[in-house]
Length: 135
Ligand SMILES: Nc1nc2c([nH]c(=O)n2[C@H]2C[C@H](O)[C@@H](COP(=O)(O)OP(=O)(O)OP(=O)(O)O)O2)c(=O)[nH]1
Ligand SMILES: [Mg+2]
View (cartoon, rainbow, N blue to C red):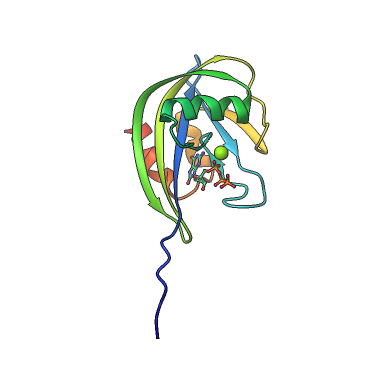
């Protein structure tokens, strides 16, 4: 008898907490089908080989929302294991500079106040991000 130990995939994700000048944060709802379908998240995506976290966040936000941001201070890095993969979420504060957010790769986008976040369902790893934001 032998067992094959296959390590689960690891994704490194740049994540943006984008603030506007009214003190609101931008969240998006993932497409209904697929991984974490229908859940809300902070926009972002996979860091490409050789890419800095800051460059990744800026690129992903252009691709997903069509807006320009300034990537600012690191907020938290969250390590989380889901059933079939694990993620490192590298979260930065960002400032909205220009453009109306468009749901180019998601179902919906919304500006929300910090105290409204609990009204939305996020993936499990986001509990720590939201704690850090409120702390
Ligand atoms: N962008 C973002 N991703 C999050 C958050 N919370 C959380 O668990 N994740 C996870 C969900 C996904 O597995 C991963 C984000 O990857 P992604 O959106 O670039 O790509 P994906 O894995 O959905 O799809 P694929 O490109 O692998 O096909 O990180 C969050 O707040 N924002
Ligand atoms: Mg994404």
